Amino acid sequence: MDDARHETAKTVGPDDAGTVVVHGRASGFTQEILAGRHRLHSDEPASAGGTDVGPSPYDLLLAALGACTSMTVGMYARRKGWPLEEVRVTLRHSKIHAADCVECEIREGMLDRIEQDIHFAGSLTNEQRVKLLEIADKCPVHRTLVSEIDIHTRAV
Image (cartoon, rainbow, N blue to C red; front, top):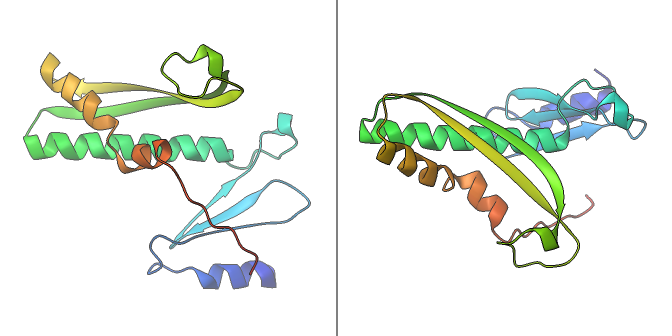
């Protein structure tokens, strides 16, 4: 590991919950991601000029939403004592014309669409499945994505 990457690795440790450091060279798309003691990579596919050594940023965004959705639904079912055995969340991201979105306030330009299909395994009643689907949209990441987000960016 070169000195710059070594310095980055030392800035985030297992006690730094909520802090993520992303480091990459300007010569390519590959990024090293440090989240507490966890390390992973992000990249773009070869078809977009990357080397495909990790998921794309949008894949990571979908993974965050899918993981949070599954965790939230599982936690709710455990609290209720429901026979939920497994949750599988399949997600897709696309851009759509705002004019094609009936339920959207924005009427012009393009907007992001995330499609989320959830499969619940277990001997659940129809009412339980409906409630779990409702709970899925209440996961913290979902709420963040549909809320107004205030991102402060600064050079340090």
